[in-house]
Structures are given as structure tokens and as C-alpha cells.
Image (cartoon, rainbow, N blue to C red):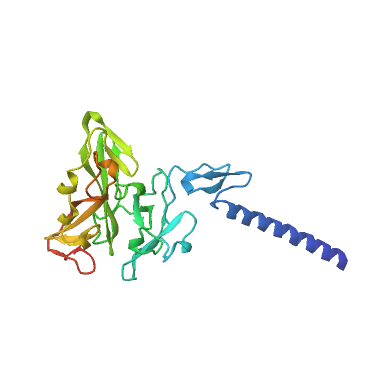
Length: 281
């Protein structure tokens, strides 16, 4: 073969190889890439709005979390968030691993459960909170101190659950992050629960007396409000719910929040608040 023809043939062959590699790379880059998707691909909500080729079926659950080490969200892949936060004294806390986001109602992979938690290395006080797939078995020392029962929009607010007015009470802790409980505040009976701007109330009566019955002064020290603390040999939280004037009849409410105490964990060997409320070993 003449040198000129050899050069043309080799150039043609290398071009084919390059096109083949490019096609494979393009396929890999499009699958699981963020939506919108090009022709021939579909957008899967269960992949956190990522693309999948049209000849595949969108899964009926979220993929497993990578659990890669991280300190901020940018270090996690699409559809994941960094499960880490910053304590009030500026120290990083939490597992520091990438966890799958679960903004919709698909199941998490394996035994993981979709829960609210702080994330992205933000300060606890910033309430930077989102839903992510977390292990059903909590980190050691944080058992029963999770936030599975509330939606993000319900934190520190009242909401209707059939004829019940519920409140989502929460606490922040440097070791365990976010803890919350959805608690029945009042059963409205046949009159029913009425959603209002800023929460919910019974349709036919208000809460005027609750400012006295559930005064936040009952939390003891002000720093106990919306945080975990030791109550004897138990870990407890005394949390607040915001009130708006529409909650209360006629002249409005006499206070802007009510508080309620929840006993969360009974400690066999006593409770210590040093570095955050925790049971002694």
C-alpha cells in the first residue's frame, strides 16, 4: 500500500474508533444525567429527575446511597446530599456521607427510611433541612432521635390530620442533628380541623387558654427550647409551635408560641448534657 493511501486508511480507521468511543461516552453521560433529556431518553422521578434510556424502565424506588465521604453537597453525585452539619461553635458534625435525596414518595433502597435532616455542612441554627434516605438503625447514641414523622413545611407549625390538630415539635442537637415529633394537640371532633394561613385550628373554637396551659416558661431554661436536654435520667426536648392570631378567638392570641415537653430516651446509667444531651455508658 502506498504511503499516501496508508495515511488515509489510518486516518479513516482512527476516526471510526474515535466516533465509537464518543458514542459510548455519550451514552454513559446521558444515563443518570440530570433532566431535561434528549430524544431517546426519559426523565425518571425515582432517579431524582435523572435521564434513563427509553428502552429501560424507571425504577419504583430510589437507588441506594453511595455513602461517599463528603463535607458539602458539591462533593456528592446528582440526586444526593451531604449528611453533615456544623455545630454552634463551628465544628463539623454528623456522618459526613452522601445520601440519596427523597423529595417524593418513592421508597428508599434496602432498609433505609426517608427522613428530614440537616445537611450540606450548614450551621444547625440555619435550619438547612431536606429529606434524605437514612439508615433505619441510627448512629450510636442517637437512637430514637430522628425526624421521620414530619414534613419540612410542618416544622414548628400546626396542621390538620383528619379531625385532629397536630403540631410538629422539633429539637436541634450538635451530636444527632434534627429530632422531631408529630403530636396531637387537640381533637376537633365533628366540627373538624380547618387549615389556616400559618397552621390549622378547630373550625368552631380557638386556643386562647393554651398560652397559659402550654407556656414556654415550663421548659425551664430558655436554652432548652427546641433543643435536647437532660430531664433527670431521660433525654427530653421542650419544643415550640408558632401561633398566629387566627388560632385564637376574638382579640387574637396572648402569646406567639406554645411549648410542649417530650420524653424521648430513658437512660439506664444517667444523662449528661456535656457536648449535647446523651445517655452515659
